[in-house]
Length: 149
Image 1: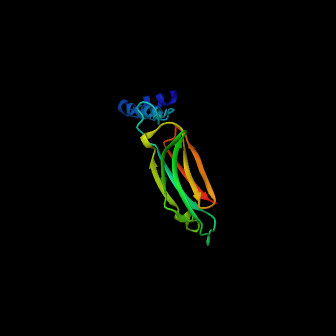
Image 2: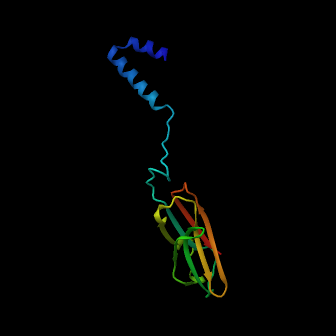
């Protein structure tokens, strides 16, 4: 910094002032940056929580005529916040990953608690099962990708 000041003394005062001001601006701009993280939850939070449900299969179920019914689910004990049943389909009709079913929903009431999200399903004359993942209270967006097997 001292050599810069000595060099600047040899240049006329106005030029020296401009160069010194430029160096100061670059020095300040290169200092550590602090990042403001806005809260997802709590007072002042204005982020809408969303979940994207993606349903597909990587298996070949050609010829499987059993009925299956999927439900997209958001909830916690003792009950669901949101359930929506998809139309009943044959297992062979579950799309591959290039043609997946995608549904995006907001969390009802923008609930800020940790909840479970995913798919419930019932295969006719076989039984019920599910695929669930947590949506933590700090998450504002989650993608639930379920590859049915």
